Structures are given as structure tokens and as C-alpha cells.
Amino acid sequence: MDYILSPLRPTQLDLKKLLVLIVVSIVVGLSFGAVYLQVSKLINPVWLAAATFHTVLAAGVLFFLWQQKQLTTSFSVFSSGALSGKLLYSPSLVIVVGLAFALVISSFAGGTVASMVDWPTQLAFVLWIPIIEELVFRAGIGASLQRYAPGVWGIWFSALIFAWVHTAPTLSGLLNGQMGLPLGPFFLGLICEYLRVAGGSLVPAIIFHMVCNSTVVVFSLFDARWMDWLSWLYS
Image (cartoon, rainbow, N blue to C red; front, side, top):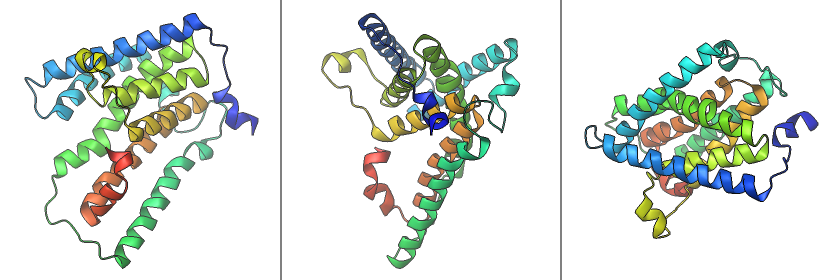
């Protein structure tokens, strides 16, 4: 049990550190939101603008990992951290089993198969976006936060930033109290950050991210009602 909880070890967090983490989270979130807005003037839709920006950042993270000779470790299939490789992939297996169970329910509840699918967009969400977002938010932002606040606080604030930027935050919105936190991206960020910290590799987090994103594609294809039933995760 200790090796499972070790990445979540509580770190002493004084008021100064807490304020720094809050300020950094706000600055990073607003900076990402501002860039999304500017890039979206050139590239539409907004998700594609964000993904393009993340791709540029991901290239920078890859270059940094290469310089630090951390590429092999960062993309190792097997764990170099506290948890064994098999355990690191168990969250992905849980989602796959849950997805299969949902489709079985749909088969008895009159699910319908979609006739038209935007495959380039769907494949981007399943293959491209998880890789670049894990590089940016886990190997980049998350790793930086872990150096400043190791353990649970680094994981928490990394997930907070990850979820908040998904709302394309603005300063005016923040000043008006519009700081919604989508639960789906927040939970995704928590689990992916934990997997990276526990295993020392991005691969389990990327796989989990891909599996979670693929649920949108599968539900869209076979029974879109699940998107409404699980709207608290997808909105």
C-alpha cells in the first residue's frame, strides 16, 4: 500500500508556497487562454488553435528532455518509479471494461449507430491531443510543479491548471468570478499526473488519456445518449 500512496505523500506547504502555486496557476491559465484567443483568429475551431499551440510547446518539451537525456525514461513502457508497470496501466483497463459494459447496456436499450463521423477530428482527439497535452502538462508544467512542491500538491495544482485551461480562461472572466472547473479534465489531470509521478514515464498517462478521449468517439458512434448521461464529465 505504501508504494501506491508514496506519490501522494503530503508535503509541507506553508502560506508562501501556497500563494506562489496559486499565482503561478492563475498566470499560466490566463496566459494559455490569451494565446488560444489570438491563435484562434488564425486557426479555427478553438480546439485546433489550442492543439497547434500545444504542439509547439510539446516540441520545446521534447527538446528539453533530449538535452537532459530524459527521453528514454520519459517514454519507457515499463515503470522506473514506485509502481510496477502492470499497475500503471490498470486505470486504462478499468475505462476499457467500463466502456464495454456501457455498450452492452446500449445494445439492450436501443442504441443507434451514427451514420456520419468526422474521422480526422476524432482521430486527432484520440491520438494527437493526448500526446501533446501529456508532454506540455505532465512533462512540462507538472514536472516543474513537482520540483517546487513534490507529491500531492504538485499533482493537485497541475490538474487544476490542466482543467482550467480547457475553459480558455480570460482575465475579465476571472474578475467576474467565472472560474469554472470542468470535472472531467480535472479528474483526468489528477490521474495522469499521478501515473507520471508514480512511474516516471509519460506512456501510462498518454495511454490513459487516449482511452478516455476514445470514449467520446465510441459513444458518438454507437450511443450518443451516454454523452448526456455523463455530461458532468464531458462538459
